[in-house]
Image (cartoon, rainbow, N blue to C red):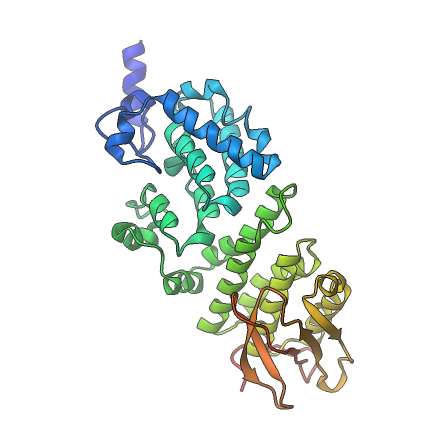
Length: 366
């Protein structure tokens, strides 16, 4: 009976679904070590590495403590996914997704790498939790650490939603920015994935420090703005982006809110918005701008009215972040600005209003 069961499990196996004993051969997937070196490491040693990493993360962000008795408990050393009931597997996957969302702001830190090594060894997250892994690492697509994690993902199958990353995986190099933006342009589902990163991460990191998601908010805004530069801004694209812009304007996270201002500033240089939509955006911007005044993001925010194509002006603080840089000059001599993290602010962002109510003109402005 045992032999028959083992044979059935073997037939049902998929890449990465081997038992821990089967994996203990000449090579073993590893984030920290060479595959041959990892094959010679016992589970107790990897457990010690993982729990040490978790302890260090807890000292940085106490909200990680909840995972001590979930993914990092001692009994997990004997965990084998192949013999788990469906309900138990789904519960583990939910915990892994939550943990990786919380881990994302700290992905470049060594304690995070120790935790990932444990999750790869025991839960085989590279094989079974690809989307959750990508949620965690995608904001760092230009780093060598991203390239290292990408090496572990099974991208050879065309059925994988991440098969387009195979060239980067094969070259063992970070992902080119142009490749990322092009994928957003040709694949609406991937753009939606990028947009969903922030709401999911905000939910998972409610107890984390306020600035924990700064890298992610910068990634979202710069990626979305690059997409608007690379393609015609259609009604479908505006429909996709609008909920996230409005959510950002209302968010308690100031980095998300400031990033939303920058995305909106770019959007209105690309299309003429219908007056009702523009009014809604301006109402949200003025209503939720107080905290941005308090922390010095804007010196002044005024909305003189929507009649006769008047504009709202936001005067920017030179010492504030995220940063902007000029991209065009308005007809009245003022300048329009785009976010560019790491440089200096200059002056104004102008939001023109559609001349005719009810119109939506997609495409580049003259």
